[in-house]
Length: 77
Image (cartoon, rainbow, N blue to C red; front, top):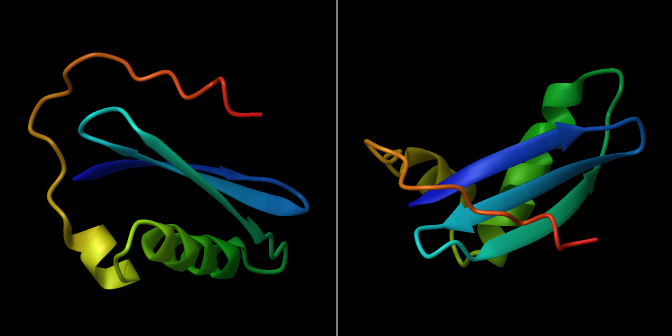
């Protein structure tokens, strides 16, 4: 299971996937200001690929029933 964070920006959309052990995987996709959902869906595909999954598999994984602490991925620049 992964928690996913998305930051839609003007040029790039940033993604982070955090696994149950707290390991962070970061990817970027080109933002699409005319329709931000295009950049989001493209980036989710890129994140899934980086995690060895396809986008459908990444999105159908169940969310944790309860969060167990905070994972700080801020050390990634």
